[in-house]
Every structure is written in C-alpha cells, then in structure tokens.
View 1: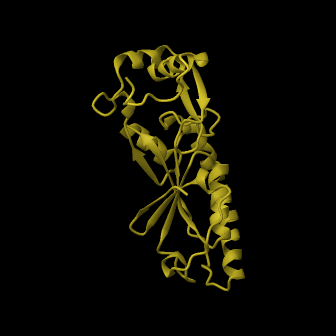
View 2: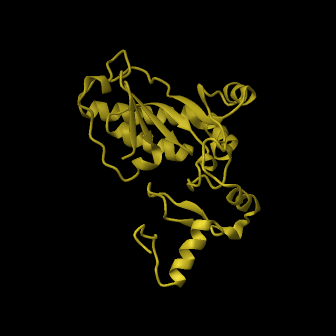
Length: 226
C-alpha cells in the first residue's frame, strides 16, 4: 500500500485503501485517550469526497482516525487518470465544503463503535479532521481556498511539466501536446502505479513502438542490438 512517513505522521492515498485489510494499531501513539486524540497523525490524500470518506471509514473500522484530508485535482497528476470525471479543483472543494461536517460526524461514529467493541478508551468529542488543497501557485488562490472554501491549509506547486530546467521535454513533443485532440490520446496500463495513464498516440515513443511491431520486433530495443 503506498504510504510515506514523516515523523509522527503517515500519508496514504485514498485510492490505495480500497480492498485492503488494515491491522488495528498496537502502538500507544496511534490510540486515543478519553481527553486527547492519537499523537500519531494519519493524513489521507484523495480526489473526491466519496473516495476520502470510504477510506476514512476503513480506517475508522480499524480503530484509526484520519486527522487530515488533502484534496488534489485529478487533472494535476502528470498523465495519471484519477477518477474525478474531469472535475477541476473548485467543484471538488465545493462538495467538501458543503458535506465535510456531516461526513466527519458519520466517520466519528464508526470510529467510536470500533473502539468500544475493542474495550478501548473513546474520546468524548471528535477532533475535526483538517482539510487542505494542493496544487496552487498564487496568493490569490491561497486566499480563495482559505476564505471561500474554508480550507485549513494549502500546498503550493508549479506546473513543472512546462519548466525546461525540471523536465526533459523537447520542443517537438511540446508542440504535439499543444496540437493534440481527443483522438490523439488514449488510456493505457503503462503506469507502474497500476493506475490508468493517458498516452499520446503521436509521441516519438509510440511511433517507435508501432514501427517495431510492424518490423516483427515488438518491445523495447536491447542496447546490444546492432
């Protein structure tokens, strides 16, 4: 399961939780007391309220509380086709803004029930999960997310695929991307993360792949080939 650790925080992708079996916590830092939330914080990254809520329920049933939900638009993921139905970040945040309070109460009820069945201390009140958004690039966007969408935090980024010093994308390929139509892209299983990935039919790698198939030599060229 994709996870990253940072001190007393663990980061998970909401999409990776589906179908997983989680182990109840054994460390005291992951368990609450009657007056305090767990010291170990779980941070969940996702692109939809339903996806985050589903993963939060899986954690709750395992006596684990999600302290923060980080929201990202699926259109900001470098080719990976996350399931946002093409929604931009605004509509996604609008849904969180309208339904966040009710969702938190439902998840807390699941969490308390799991703690009670294991005869563990239960906090008297829910520690409201923080939620933030990632992928912004200006002070105006930061103010919009905090003031209108009531985000607790924001994450700044740059459109790195357009920065020549960061990515090795030649001008010819950039021009192909600019000219691409809906017919020029397709979903593939080429991502090592196991997620659908958008491929460009006119890319040089695709042209080379098709040429090798036509020559009866499919696959990547071996460096020992003459």
